[in-house]
Image (tube, rainbow, N blue to C red):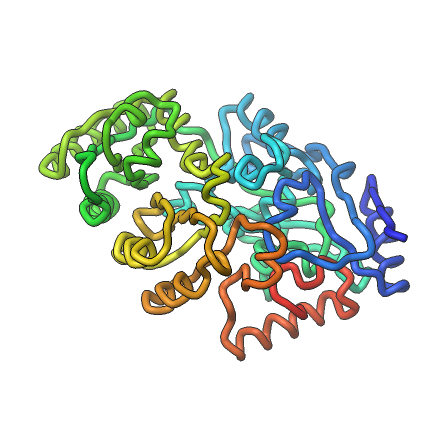
Length: 412
């Protein structure tokens, strides 16, 4: 019989994990459930539901940190920070709509566990770079903690970096502390338009490279080919009639105005330039952040996230699309390729892995039916030495394999 535990505090969480260890019962760890189908399908006999462990524990705007229980909805946290004009500067995405799990249901624990980040990652890093500390229960049934409420508080091994991106396979977090930063006063997005006929991704890589290499402190650089651009709720983007390269500038009003004009002068030769101000900029970058061009696309069931050197982005994407039917758009200056594919054997993994290997990058299968995720490596396959290290870490934290077993790699 399947067991479900829904602890309301750390003591109850500890009891639940201890029971799983004593009974050698593998458990699926969830909270909001928005990323439940991100990763390999698991064979578990129970569920550890952390959704009741929710709420902001401590928020110190002047000290730039917030501590919240792991099951706290991101929507609640974002609203709390908004009241004080603050934000998580790594732009945590909401992948619920992409994965068919609803809007605004994700939790802070899920964001940290999957180490997600949005377009500002090129400047601010990912979730792992903003975690100051956490409390958790390991797969051994032991409570442990790391870090605190300030940046320079780590001595020895930084467990926060290990927990971020571990997909709940090492421990179940009870609460986390993250740093926060002020929201920008103004946002300006420069849009470089490209003709509708043909593919102009290579030119987009050049303009993004030039912008990111400038002194103008660009905080977002994305390119949407014509089809992806046409899905935007921002008229300037959807009605452009072609591809759009977007460059974001943020900060105090006078600074943004000055930098926007200076950058515009530097990239003027690439094509026509339009501007989005703060409100439309927020809408546009939220669409990029949440992979909105591929939401609800039943004709493109497989979605990959591919990371390569930015200069190689368009070349790798076009190489893949010569063999497979699909669509792409680019973030992180071309270093992150979002690729959606039409039905194809093994989600096109062989072609994609070969292209990525040549560029020295990695690819993650974000969206696919369970049977495909059970057959195709969802995460980038690891070299033997790295795979051995991953296995040893899993055994060190969770020797009985009771927490999300096999979610990232088979047998781990």
